[in-house]
Image (cartoon, rainbow, N blue to C red; front, side, top):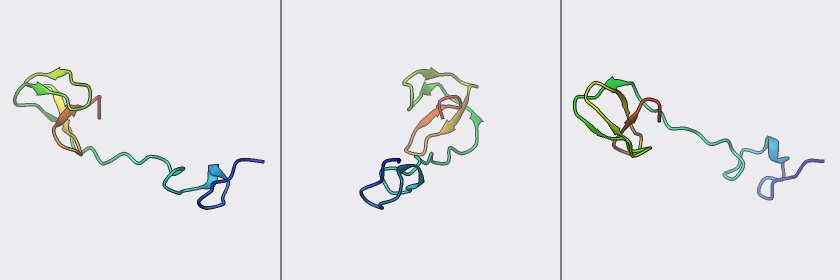
Length: 67
């Protein structure tokens, strides 16, 4: 017998409550080439002019591979 959620009383693998629901990733937007050098908001690594980046949902820009 599988574990049950205390909030919904459903089996954990079927539950969609705030604790057991799968994590949703925010929309990352379209990739574009950086016009200026900057710092990735996700990995703190630098990116240079011409590298492919995306706008981070919480602000700033990230490498397209970090999004």
